[in-house]
Length: 109
Ligand SMILES: [Zn+2]
Image (cartoon, rainbow, N blue to C red; front, side, top):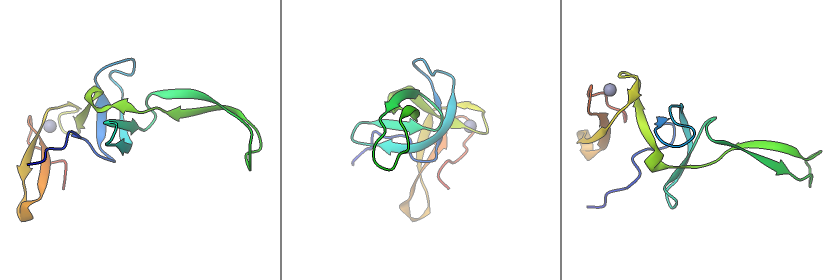
C-alpha cells in the first residue's frame, strides 16, 4: 500500500502549528508534493524585489506566499474550530476520505 505523506490538499483549511506563523489559518493554494510543502493563502509572506522587465511597468516590492513544510500545518476542523488529527476511512466506491478524529466530520465529501 502506498501511503502518501501528504495529509493535506488544495483548498484545505489548515492551521500553522509551528514556526513564526504559528496559530494562523488559511486555505491551501498549492501543494508541492515533491517538496512536501504547501502554499497557504495569505500566510508566510515574503517580500521580493521585483525587477522591471517585459510587460511589467515597474519593479518594486512584491509580496508572495512562501511555501511551508507540511509538518508545520494541521488540518483545521471547522466544527471543532481547531487543528485536529485526521483519520482515514473508506467510503463508498472504495474512495478514501479523511475525517476528524475528534468529531467525525468528513473532510472529503
Ligand atoms: Zn472536528
